[in-house]
Image (cartoon, rainbow, N blue to C red; front, side):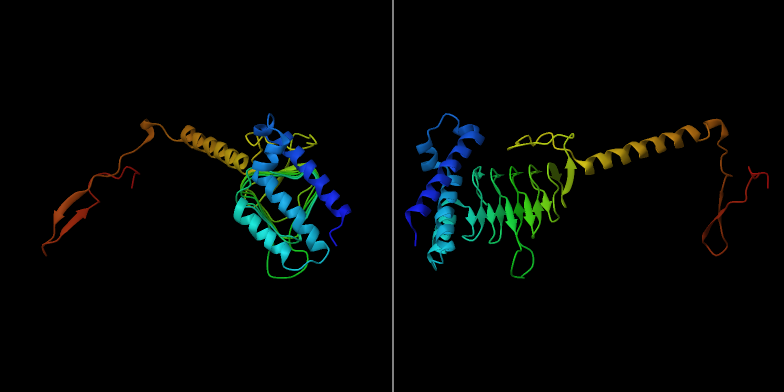
Length: 257
C-alpha cells in the first residue's frame, strides 16, 4: 500500500526537483518555491510521474496511466509510469517531451523542450535509452533505442542519437557524432549551445579550402593569351540539294597539318 514511507520519499524527491528548477532555470532564480511548484509545467509533470510511478511499483492497475494521461493533457509532457527517473531531474519548458517505458535517468539530468527518449522496433524488454548522471539534452534531440548516454555528456539540439555516447562528451548532428569538448570534463548542466563543435561543418570547410586551392592551381598553370591559337575559319556553303553545309577545311591548319 501507499504508506507514509513512500509518501515521504515522494515529498523528498519533489523538494529536490523544485530546487533543481530554481538552480537551472534563470527565470526561477527570484521566484519562491511555492510559485515554482504551482506554475512550472516541468515540475507538474514530474510530480505527477513520481505519484504514478510509485503506484505502478506497488502494482496498482489503471490509475498510474490515468495520471500520466492527465499530466500529458495539462503539460504537454508524456512520461510513462514505468520510467525510472533519478533525483534532481529538470525539464525546461517541456512541451513535446516524450519519455518511454523503459527509460532510466540518473541524477541531475536536464531536458529541454521537444526531447524524445524513444524506442526502436516492436520488441518487448529494454528498448529505451539509459541516461547517466549530469547529462544535458538539448531542444528537439531524439535518443532512440536501448543506448547508454555516459555521465556528464551533452546532447546538442536536434541531434539524433542511436549509438552509445561516451562519458563527458558532446554529441551533435544527425546521426549524432560524439566529440570531446576541449578535453574538459563538464559537470552539471551546460546550456552553452552556441559553441558546440561541428565535425561535419569542419569537414565541409576543409573540402572547400582544398577545392579553392585546386582551382587556383588550374588558373596559375593555364596558358596566357599569347599562347592561344585560333581555330581555322569555317565557310558556309549552299549545297546543290538546297541544304547548307559548313566547310571546315578552309584556310591553313594552325596545327601545321
